[in-house]
Image (cartoon, rainbow, N blue to C red; front, side, top):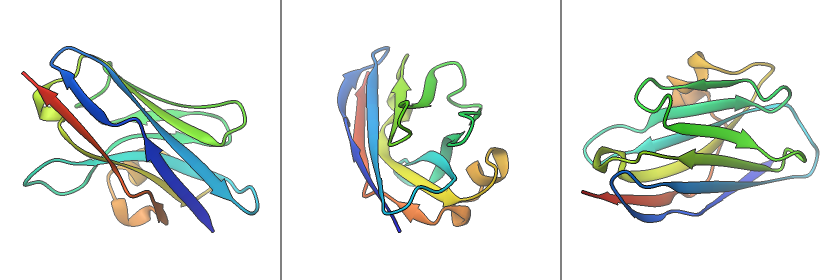
Length: 128
């Protein structure tokens, strides 16, 4: 069993930055595909970025590539999402998620059903 807890949501002006964190708790370490998803008002939950826990390889949705950076700490127990050049359309609830997997990337990012574990979410609000 894996438990995920987000922190760091909040408000910012357009063009500003925020960083989200996700604490990963588990009884036994396991390979995971870690991801950030977001749900914007009126739209389905969509994948933002993934990182494979074993080798830190990353994949981004085109809407955030070059602006957002997903990373993990050296202990592989905390996931981060650094968000720069934020825009009002980035406003939404951001969720940390994880899948028991031996790989990661686009197929996980584009199908939220692949995720086995979810955090409760962190609200991000960007004003123009």
